[in-house]
Amino acid sequence: MNKEEVLQQKKDFFEIKIEDDKVLNLEKIFENKHPIYLEIGSGKGEFLSKKSVQMKEFNFLGIELKKRRIVNILKKLDIVDNKNVRLLRLYVDHKINQWIKKDSIDHIYIIHPDPWPKRRHHKNRLIQQAFIDSLTKILKADGIVQISTDHTEYSKWIINNFKQRNDFISVYENHFTQEREEDHITTFFETTKMKEGFNPIFMKFKKVNNTKKEGNCD
Image 1 (cartoon, rainbow, N blue to C red):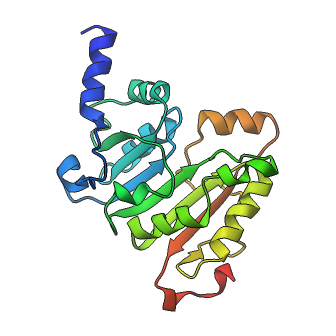
Image 2: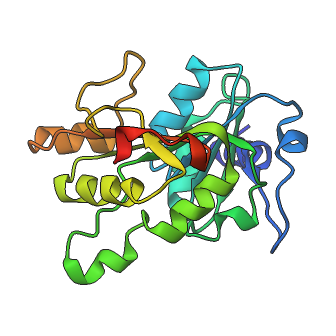
Image 3: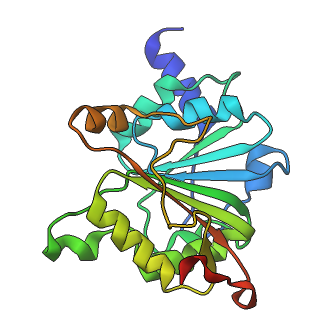
């Protein structure tokens, strides 16, 4: 097959088609009941392609909006090595729970979301209360939201939004860390920003019952 045919084969295998207001049947799509890890904003696909190999007994759903980025991700995926991956081309906002079933996701990754640094653009930031409302709906009990950013002010914004909640606690005692986990995957964007002197800030929040909340996010 030529490159175009290979790419089309990958597109047919990996990309999920959605219908308006119809919830995805992820068990049917993946053909198993393995835990589902969701990456919101898959960028160039380094994380998704490598993490899914590290964790073959988990399903990975990557969401990206731009067609060009979907193509770049497809080029990194292999139908055999990454058979536990699916892609969804979708604009992500607080309506994400219209397509993803309640209590169906085990872990959510949001890696370097756009910080929209200018104050007048803060309304465009992904991390808002309405968006977190949707995340808590699609997450299972004790599910994790894992976020990283190299923008210090945005990290404070993210932490403050989660501190307002009674359905999440911070996994990290001080709400963030700059230590990488042992199996950390460094993306192209992270490498570029580190060369510019911007080190990533890692945050991790666990979904809890309202009555179970402890002091970490107070």
